[in-house]
Image 1 (tube, rainbow, N blue to C red):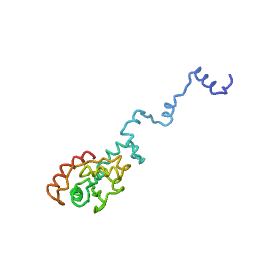
Image 2: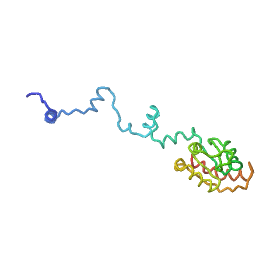
Image 3: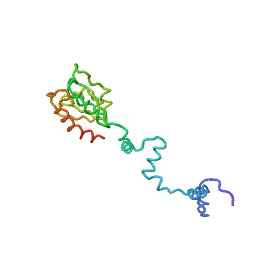
Image 4: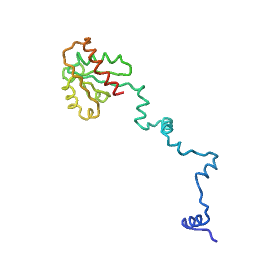
Length: 180
């Protein structure tokens, strides 16, 4: 009997002689290691391997792992950035796990809101509906994927007034907890 020249002839001969090779079994015999193939696909093993090689897999799991390390970035917006939003910034800078900034929508604002502020923020908190509408109109692309919340706090308070501080704490803290 001559040696088979084509792949098809070799396969036919192997079937005839029933000498098919189980490559997995042969590899484990060769290396002395038997792999448990089911364990390779467990979620915790994938996460462990992803962390070892520096990959972020899957993103939702990575977010859960990094919630303690990354603070929530909150941008407070009012009209002129003189009373309400600076008060909110001062109150929430003291809260652990929160970074706060404030800005205004008017041209004569102490600090006018800009594109880098919108991109920086995880949560945009506006004091009135007109501020949210202005942010959505001026920064359409950047604000499209941002969470924008309206507190409905009128311009009737002074800087660091007790009623304003308590109102901010009761309305903003649930928003921050929800975005963590």
